[in-house]
Image 1 (cartoon, helix red, strand yellow):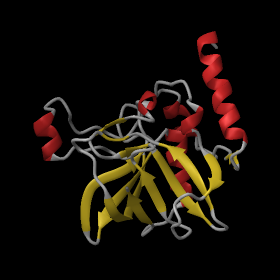
Image 2 (image 1 turned 45 degrees about the horizontal axis):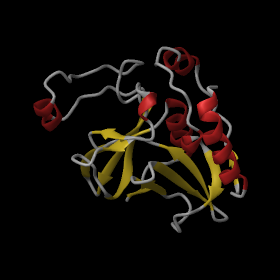
Image 3 (image 1 turned 60 degrees about the vertical axis):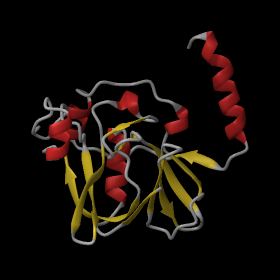
Length: 195
């Protein structure tokens, strides 16, 4: 650790010492998950965007997902006024989306077929088979408003260094191990609020 980062780390530890939070263990993963995640570039973990059980800051009902786009955090609300907090990357200002949706589909290592609007903006993007090179990463949760696909997803990433930033085309990106954890916990029709 470079000495220039030591004061920042000490300040963060001191600030968090008074908080009521604890780490959440990694989920069990399959042999395929282990193999493919090992092929995704790694990034230095920033403790601000780690996976923690915390006091619920959302006030929403247990079982609800709340994405705070300004804070770059996703909360999965638990019983007893608790929430699991995950760091995320969100849509940049031009492409961000807010609203209420529900999870209508879940997929492991999904294929990616970029929408026409994205292909028009970035002609280099193309269909990508599920796997470690796929921008959707290890899991995807598909957000719908009623029966209409919003075209937004909560998904993994093959760019973990971007967690904590506003860089996507509107989707909510998570570290692959975090999206696996969330995927294992949520059911279809889970309410998702993006603020």
